[in-house]
Length: 550
Image 1 (cartoon, helix red, strand yellow):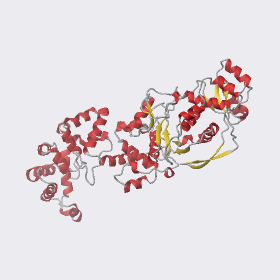
Image 2 (cartoon, rainbow, N blue to C red):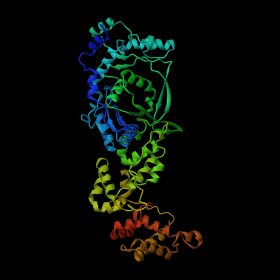
Image 3 (spheres, rainbow, N blue to C red):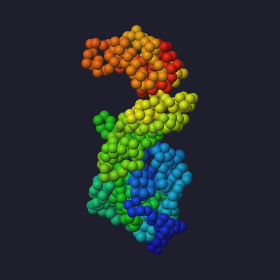
Image 4 (spheres, rainbow, N blue to C red):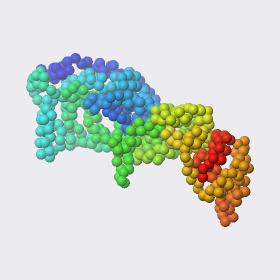
């Protein structure tokens, strides 16, 4: 018997590799088009690092009129969680990053290069494993877990590298008749790659982010097919990336050390290897040290955190691009209203060390993003968020939609729009004082600032209502009247007048307007007071100022 007989004994019914080469032809794309993918395992929540990777992969594919696909790597079925694929797809959908091809829910997919779930591609992997066995480039291995443990202990005692290689690869050159006899006896086995690498030789590799790197060749006879017939990640990804036409693999830099093995797999299988770009992880500062964002410690590491907080997907993506490319911030300043799609992402402008995650920066970006929304967009996005996370807010918004739109329209669409909302979960706190039934149902503590004397506060409010308040006034008239009010009560009508001669005045017009603002809203920081009054209307303004409890 020869190795072809051995391969037929192990995989008697699989199709030849030529069948799959024909079934998955080379993609017909324009020159320079990038084909890349997001290939997660459905083993838990989607990490922000996965979203970051997907964003870069999709952006590069779109920029070059290429293809971005979603492949689910579910060969480790012991770790798979229920609805894991649905969670991955939902995360991409929530961030408007659905793939051109691949899984679109737990069971369904689009595209001509599927199945896009590795567990459904078992026969494909076995076909290529059979081909390697026929060429004596792979072999069955019958070592038990106990025997492998014993081997590891001996290696430790001998102070040599652990692993299955060289003289330690006991089944690598066993006689064929002994191997075939064990298979016929029904003994359990795995399939290993027969490595031709040497640990004392180096390979040179150019990573599109890390630059030129050197590694020792891989000399380990790694497992390619497990005892359940499913492939290992290393073997499956090489075959899939070849058949699916992947030209660029974007992944975390924890995989950088696997490059020698992966390049060896492509070479052994007779495939052209894709290019690789290894991303530095997103880091967090803790006690003066940097560490990776942790699933266990950091709620912001989970993509679902951003949905719960109500941070718009556009803001998160803008922040991630800010991390990704050193020139993004400069581009944004020069193109304030441009869409993210217009930014040209470049791998050679990506940092080789991990960027620190900065929630303050993210929320600042989010404020700017939301400030550009119309009142209708803010309304719709807030309703959508409140429907899942805050039923009371939803009820408040829907009770009088037209009024709510007026509230959300305050200082919106101006040259310098309001930036008090960083996330949809901020909306309730920022607008509920505008609703009389909410406002009057609460006990308020009026924290007046410079002017503290209660009699003086009463005098300002009563004189304003008696002599100066008129809801029909335009903005300039209204402001002039506030100045007149200030002057009548002994305050400077201009801030600069007060600064020049502070001894002449009790304070300035800003101090007086602050009293009215706080009396009207019970808060010191609000959007434009004139617009607030116009939305509240005459009756509400008068009632609030008259019924204030000092």
